[in-house]
Length: 251
Image 1 (cartoon, one colour):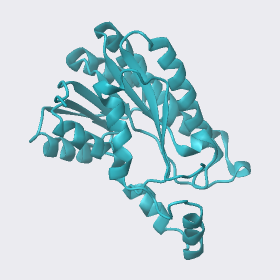
Image 2 (tube, one colour):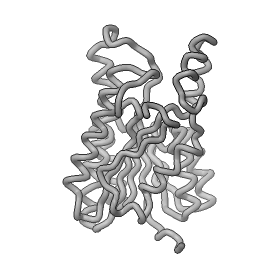
Image 3 (tube, helix red, strand yellow):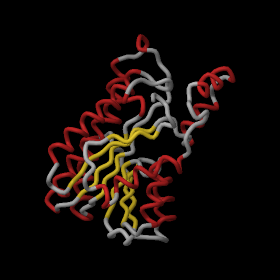
Image 4 (cartoon, one colour):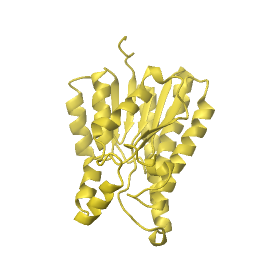
């Protein structure tokens, strides 16, 4: 198998658990990386680490500040013309009953998950289409495919919206050389998720594990493979698809 063509990848939320490992793998493959994250210390630390392997640009920004993020993304596209985009922002470990949710919960989770992904594709997609090549990967959730033991209705609704939005974008981009897909992770033991699990009572922990067909959370290493595939040249005929990484949950 030939080595992948070196390209430029823009990773939104790059310093987070899954995307940090995706960044490392893409660096190993020789791609140039633009790492976008609001955690300045974490993103610069990651850029320093990966800068030993490839060319890396760290950009500190909050993707949920839409006007500022759009300006930053426009500058990134003008300077780097990324042909791989991975939107890894969003997530919620709060278990809140539907009757206790507020409109504020919906506003925030739709901003973090749906609107933030949309603005990145809005800015990057046209340049990718003009160049005739692009790989867009949005993060949804197993909950967005059905329901969730681990979150709340606002979060599940937002992740379902990410899936629908991505399918529409994939349809509009079909034939341009740009494909857009979704990875729907189940419970993956990132630091944030593992921390939330540890804060549960022992009874609650046992209840959670009893609901997982494989009896455990997935590892970050197990979560990245499908993301990397959808970033690759071999994913050229996959568009509008949803890949589940959930250990058999909701089979």
